[in-house]
Length: 415
Image (cartoon, rainbow, N blue to C red):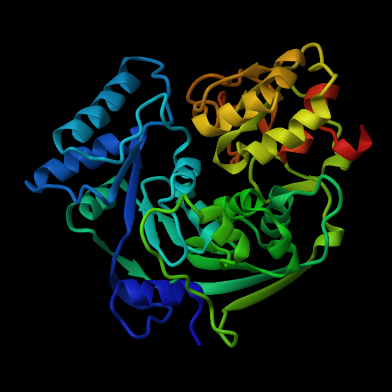
């Protein structure tokens, strides 16, 4: 009666059964590092005096792209040299890639039943396609590149069932924010969150990624959605290699079960300084200085389409700046072909190439003392996007776009 997380960890560790609490040594399919987490991983790896498992390693510069200063340039150089020295085939140089988690999915590394680790907490995004994706440290990443295995404690699983049809402008982001608002930022600590129900089945892959992406914001070890026909269609012509889908048993045992009616959800905002501080967007009347659309949570073409539809023929409010960041080169190209980039630029928004810079408060979009940003990203901790006395409100792309136009946090249904 195992869950999908228990099955994947069981298969990958060669065990017939893997139960919550078990310590297993499992074979990973891929290990991903970015430009920030890569340097310490490479330094540890060199101490092993061995060759990396080239096909398993994926190197993606994305946090400080393009490099903002000498320190970030040195980080990028270390990754470039490591990829060259060991002839790593899966290295995505600036101009060829994008935000790591979207790129991992887009480039076919992620598939149902796979076990993928990444030196970045939002690796849980990969659960949207039925994989067990989880974040690790740089030292662990070095070990995974060397031997292809890591130890895991098998997590308990929670089942979240969402039924019904969401209202207008209610997106995957709102679903996960409502769940986090309900259970809190520690509500899934070291647990595998499984998302089920007719609402989830009706969502696009893009919306599912938004949900799985934020599992870590509830403390989750993984955030998994069982694969279906939409998953198969998305992977067709994209996925690398063979894969075997894994599903939870119908009588699988969960440590907790939660049920929600999607019809009760509205466009939702998480107030500072935690993702659990949720309120309906319509109940907030907060002036903003910046609106940010992008990131591994909401930088996909579907997100840009929703925002562009709202902003078409309108202007960003005087005194407000809007930053739009497509998550990958491919998404940027699609946005250009569809005229979305022109829509944003006509509205006086600033459009950037793929980068994580603003999301982590690294550069490009950093907030000053007292400034307020409504953002489609995943974290709103103190100082997350800049000054410790700035404030970040998390929201879906439609709310971000509507707020950019009005200059205040706005439910797009009220436009």
